[in-house]
Amino acid sequence: MKIAVLPGDGIGTEIVAEAIKVLEVLDLPFEMESALVGGTAFDAHGHPLPEATLKLAKEADAVLFGAVGDWKYDKLERQFRPEQAILGLRKNLGLFANFRPAICYEQLVSASSLKPELVSGLDILIIRELTGDIYFGQPRGRRIAVDGHFPGAEEAFDTMRYSRPEIERIAHVAFQAARKRNKRVTSVDKNNVLETSQLWKDVMVEIGTQYPDVALDHMLVDNAAMQLVKAPKSFDVIVTGNMFGDILSDEASMLTGSIGMLPSASLNAQNQGLYEPSHGSAPDIAGKGVANPLATILSAAMMLRFSLQQADAADRIESAVQSVLAAGLRTPDIYSAGTTKVGTQQMGDAVVAAITKTT
Ligand code: NAI
Ligand code: MG
Image (tube, rainbow, N blue to C red):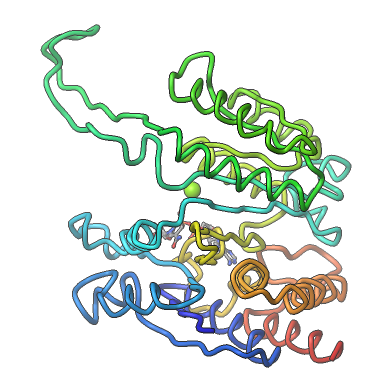
């Protein structure tokens, strides 16, 4: 089995280096091959997603991705911007299901923006559809309005679009994920206003009948945004479209203390996946050795579980992360009085040491 390792820009290289250390100490039967992606790839090859990088990613069983982007590329034409690399990978690999678990580790309860009793024990999973919706629907563009409130004025428009098969496949993913958890799916939409949401809800109900052991309920997205901060533990699995999922998953990240703790997985129909921390390249702290590598290390654990059939190894990584937190080690983003402040490499080394201790 082969893992394509794409560290990318900014803190991407620093945090992926720690995840590699962790994977190596597990001594599993796979090889890793690295390639450039994002701004560093643009600098070297004139494109954020060079052919060779895409080929490596397609041929691999899984992709471990760091982050891309830097303000210095802001003036480039859109197609050359580092962020196009991640969109290109999603599209070319057919990655339609984005998993973002929001888990509040007991040791980090005080780092959450909510009261401890609301987040203590929090363990929810947001599943975001990744290839449809208003981000990709055509037509889109700018024009001079011929009707509406201001005929003759410049206007812009996007198209929200979902097809039945797109909704069906993400529904199956959600129900199957819920089966392995607490057997509850909340489908989030805006069916009181949107036609796409009505189809979304209808299809969720239909597919739900194939999973009688899983409880399905529906929530409007505005209410879901409210419930996530009012009673986040009332959820198990949330499944929603591309745009609502983008927003709700970032909201959920703040429940857990730091975006530096949050892994993610993006899967295609073959369970091939791209695994990356939920955060970006953090240019403000890049090169300082202070970035939290745990989101990337936990992404590597998801990779072992979902794409490489190594659930035991994934468990060992997750336990090691918990024991390091229990020992009081904290990168600055999760630091609080009474704990020990460490840098990126020390945190990675501590996880490696915790894994070694359990062998
Ligand atoms: P960001 O997620 O990179 O940073 C937001 C804030 O969180 C910053 O203050 C940063 O220092 C902090 N942070 C992020 N990760 C951290 C970690 N592991 N440890 C400690 N602190 C951490 O988002 P921002 O600043 O909006 O974007 C920076 C660049 O990243 C942009 O070019 C953006 O386009 C790109 N980006 C890339 C993504 C990807 O590669 N998938 C996702 C999101 C943003
Ligand atoms: Mg986002």
